[in-house]
Length: 577
Image 1 (cartoon, rainbow, N blue to C red):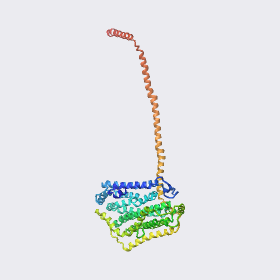
Image 2: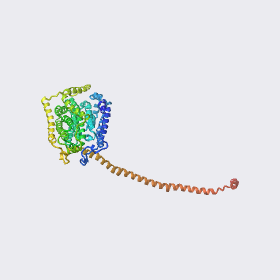
Image 3: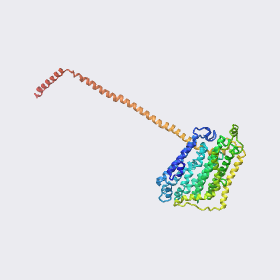
Image 4: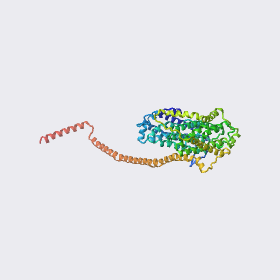
C-alpha cells in the first residue's frame, strides 16, 4: 500500500494506497488484541479532566482509525471536487493545466471553491501525519510492537501526509498563484506545522514512557517538515522550502527507525515501558547505547549529523523568508528537542539501575546486548545518520538539482531566488539553531544524567498541563466522545421516548379506540340491521309457505275455481258493459 501510494500517478490510485496504509496501521497498532495491561499506554490511573488517559491496543487502533478518517473525508471531498472540474485524476495533467485561464483551477476559483478545496485537501495530511488538531492518535499508537512503531514512524505511513503535501504542493502553488491565494494556503500549512512541532516537543519533555517520547518526537519533526513545505509557498524560493521538507523527511526516517528499534530492545531488557524503571543500562548495552546516542544527536540537530543540515535549512528559510514568529516557534522547538532527547538518554541509559532493574538482576535477568540480528539494523541506521550528515554537502546539491528538474515538465517557473543573505548571516543562523539545541541538551544532562529519575504523580501545574497533553485529548474525549454519547442519550430520552414514542403510543391508543368504536358500530348497527332484514324476510317467507300445501289436487281445484271466477267476471261484468 505504501508503494501504491508513492508510485501512483493519479489521485484515485493514490487514495487506494492511502486508505490501505490506514487500514494496515489500525491492524498493526492493535496487534496485541488481547489487551494485556503490559501493552497499554500511559500510567495506570492517569486521568485528565476526569477522563482516563490509559489506552489498550484495541482502543488505540480504533482511535487512530477514526481520527485519520476525519481527515480522509476532507481529502476525498477535495479529490472529487478537483475531478469534477478537471475530469482527470492524473498529476501531470492537473499541473499542466493548473495555470491556464479556463482550467479546472480557474473554474473552481470562479465559484470561490479553489482555496477551500486546497484546504480540504490538506485535511488528509493533517490526519494522516498527526498534525494539529488531529495529532492525538499517534502518541497512543505506541501500543504496537517496537518494530511496527519503527515502520509507522520512519516509512511513508505517518509521513504519507508530508509526501502528499509535497506531491500536490506545486499543483496548488500554480493554481493559487493566479488568484493571489498562495500565502493563505501555504500559510496554514506553515503555521500548523510550527505549532504542532512545539506542541508535541513540549509533551515529549515530560513523557514517562520511552516510546511516547519518540512518538511525540515524530509528531514534532513532521511539524518541521510541514513548516518547510509551507515556507516553500511563503518565501521567495519555492524549491528551497520544497527540498528542505523532503530532505528532512529522508533524514528523519533514518535516525527515527534506529531509535525505535533500539528502544524496542531496551523495553525487552527492562521489561517495562517506563523510563523511570530503567536506568544504568549503558554499561551492559554499549552498542545499543551508542546507537541511541548517534541517532539522538541527529534528532537534536548536532553538527555533522544528517538532522543538523535539514533542520538548519528549515529554520534558516523561515528567518530569511521574513516569518520571524514561525522562526521563533521552530527555534524554541529545537531547544525543547535537545532537552527531551538528552533527558530520554539520561533516564534510560545513564545513572544507576532503578529498583525495577535491580529486582530483575536479582532474579537472574541481567541487562545484555541484543543479538546481531537485532543489533545490526539499528546500529547501521545510527551510523548511517552520521554518514549522511558527513556526506550531505556532496549529495545535497545533485539531489536538489534532480528535484528541481522534476518541475521542468511544467511551463510555470517556480520562484528560486538566489540566497541574498551573507555568509555571516548563514553562519549566525546555523550557530543559533545549534546553540539552542545544545543548551537544551545541557540542561537535561545536568538534571538527568547524574541523578536517578523518580516519577512523581504530584506535579506542578505547568508539568501537569504538559503531561496531560495540554488537556487536548481529554477535551476531545469530553466533547466528541462523551459529548456525542450524552447527546445520543438526550435524543433517546427526550426525542425518541419523550416525543416519538409518546406520539406513537397516542396514535396507537387513538387507533385502538377508533377500532373499538367501529366494531360497536358494525356490531350494533350494521349487523343488527342486516339481521333484522333477514328476520323479516324469513317470517314473510314462512307466511307465504303456508299458501303452498304441496297437494296437486288442491292446486287443480284452485286453478279451476280461478278459471270459473274469471269466466263469470268476463260474462257478467265485462259482457254487461
